[in-house]
Length: 323
Image 1 (cartoon, rainbow, N blue to C red):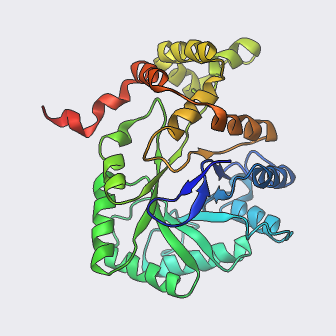
Image 2: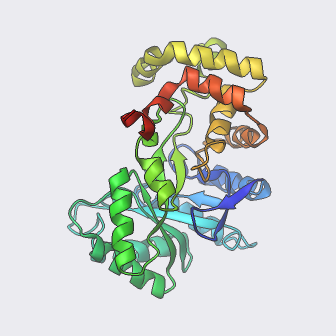
């Protein structure tokens, strides 16, 4: 396993992040336990979840599954850098969502109970809260840090100016502020290169990409279509049709390099200087083991240039605003 620091912090995390959104939704509890055990065996120490995750088990279900896995002991909690998120409404009652000081306090305590732990390594804001001032948010987080319930703060789905505003407010309070940002980022969706990544790099914030395979489009979907009687339908088919030429070129290039398209997509993210590690969200053990292969894929300058040619999102970089 490869490791790096989370943003400008001293926290050491694995270059792959185990996403748990499918636990309780697509993966049964026993399978979720096996995947988490396999992650530790492979050296993955960075696990990501959210208080809203749960699928058919309802909000909080995924955190509860992780908590019961921790309760088995064997150093499971101690070996894990645990990240969870808050923002979404947990029910219809007022103040059970967003980032008010009241909800931060209540949501944090509820997550701690479900996760069967006394602290969160990385507590993340799942979305910007346009109705709560940053001084209120940071005051609540300062209390959580002082109480030993939270070690670091992170964000998710923030714009570049959100990161800048959050960090400026934290600096005024002599508080660390954000050390990470989770964003949609992959070969097909590179819009965060416009402002989010420059803002993150300027402020020492590590990027944690979610949906690194863009809903499976970058994971060898054409081969799966050929090898299966099941055809892509609905929104997935529309997305594939819209990007079919790029996906075909990417699949051919992956064959040329001797790797699977999904391995190339993950490896490309690992080669981006702002990226801490992409989130892999396996539903099965096979999906987890295949994702780990990406760590062994080296892309040289020519390969990276070819991927830029196929997926030219890099042309929106800030330098292209002007001459």
